[in-house]
Length: 218
Image (cartoon, rainbow, N blue to C red; front, side, top):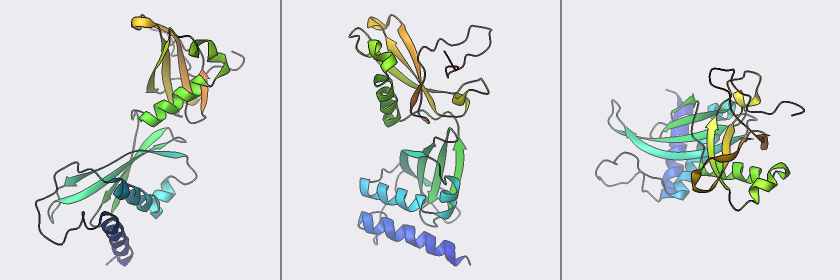
């Protein structure tokens, strides 16, 4: 028997039970919990804190800058019957990928996988827009009342030596009134927290892909 894993599972159960005041582990019978049960804020914080402290998770994200994107729970089938699974989605800004961490609440067992192309969170989009608005080279667009900053689409460069081929880059546009077209496309590198391209125009149809990061001297 793996007593270390048993203690890990018990620590998770006790932590969530204390925080939830018994809501997750009731002493009386009740109907099975339906899928996609939402955590309370305190349960969510406790789960994230416990998960991030586990050795396998710490090893995977050691010295990486990460951001919590989402936390949810669902019910999964198992040989012993339905069980509750909690899932944490992290953005890893050093690898440019999202990391999905699933926890079996009963056993404490953790599984992880990396996911490309995960849509940005509202917090990431807000951060990207703030970087755009604070860039002196874009002030005339920011202060133009006829333009609206929109977007925040996560994109990866197809140019191998482009930092945006690995790092997390979002695409924004200053849109003209009535969506008549963009006055300027802008790329923000969230990994570096800078505007990567102040006037991104994309590649020509059938041509080579365009760099999302401005070349030196441009």
